[in-house]
Each structure stands twice: as C-alpha cells, then as structure tokens.
Image (cartoon, rainbow, N blue to C red; front, side):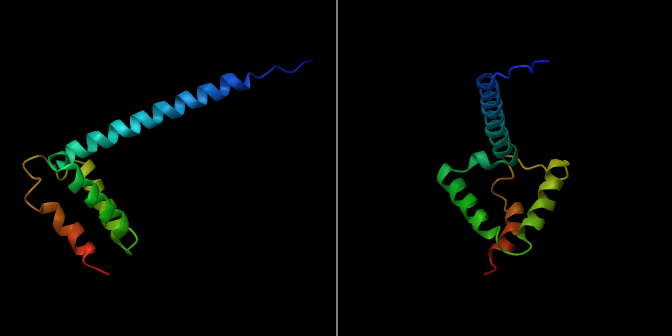
Length: 102
C-alpha cells in the first residue's frame, strides 16, 4: 500500500488564509467593541493612552478579575454604554479605583 502524498504547500496556504481571516475578524470585533462601549467618541490619542494605562494596571493584583466581571456584565447586557454615557464617568469609578493603587 502506498501512502497518500500530502500537499504541504496547499496546507500551509490554507493555514495562512485561515490565520488572515481570524486576524481580520479579531480586528473587526475590536472595532465593534470600541463603538459599543462609546469609546469611539474619544480622540485616538486619548484612547491609546487609556489602553496603555490599562495594560500597565493589569499587573496590579485583582484588577483583571474586577475588569473581567465588569466585562461579563457588559456583554450580558447589564450595563449598556453608548455615546451618551461616554463622558459621565460611570465606568471610570471602577477602573479608576484600581488605577490609584501603586
């Protein structure tokens, strides 16, 4: 019996195509998340600065779990942020308390 010959080039191409599709979907979902939270109302520089600050604060014990639970509530529809909520500081209370540590 002979083995079936594998076309490694075709498999690599298919994997590359799948990776590009997944990356494009991730980028689209991130954009949708930014819009659904109302963060699209922020200047790009402000949004980038806030994200950099959050990445740094993610190392503080307990912040990730608190943010994860807030995110779960958001995705379950418990708190809907919109463009009208962007400046009222509701979300800043929870993230701000973790940010003042350290």
